[in-house]
Length: 224
Image (cartoon, rainbow, N blue to C red; front, side):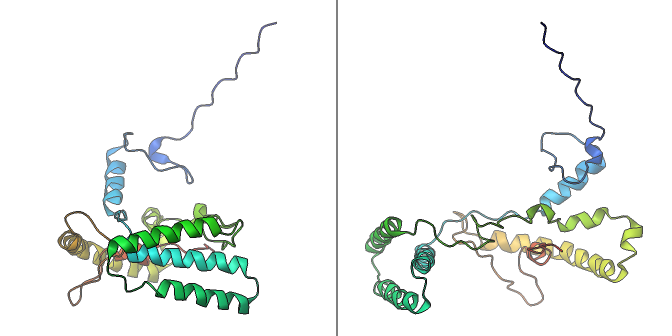
């Protein structure tokens, strides 16, 4: 008995230039029409790229302290008991807060990390929106980037005339401040790269902070 032939493959009914909603973004190696390539190139240049940075010793201690309190909260159900042990925990951290020798401070941090690892809660409480929570990234598929409004039909934009009139002013302001933002980042970034995750504020009167557009236009955490 011969096996049944495989069903023919279905041809796709859409071209790369008419990508339906929900499909992934185009890969850099693919070629698209000139107008589309220019549009995507402009969006890639304006896209937000978070600079890589190493955590400082202070940030490592702070994150360890927060993790320790969260796991302690999972151990101590009653609030009064938790507050008592939280004060003892804070006293242990305050004991070495003025340590000047970085070698000793690093050794203390490593010992504290090992102690936390050995005594961590087996099933700590995790907030729903935190990594590992039940609602983490649940609404990411519904978040639409702000540049999608550029592809709206004029009849759709006519339903919100005030918003799109102000949006054109915001886009003009973004294009005017973009060069100054990049120049400020180039001047204030150390040679070996940024040492923290924080972005610098605006230095001159009337200027906007670097990458402000990506902060003010970020989507809602829970889209309506």
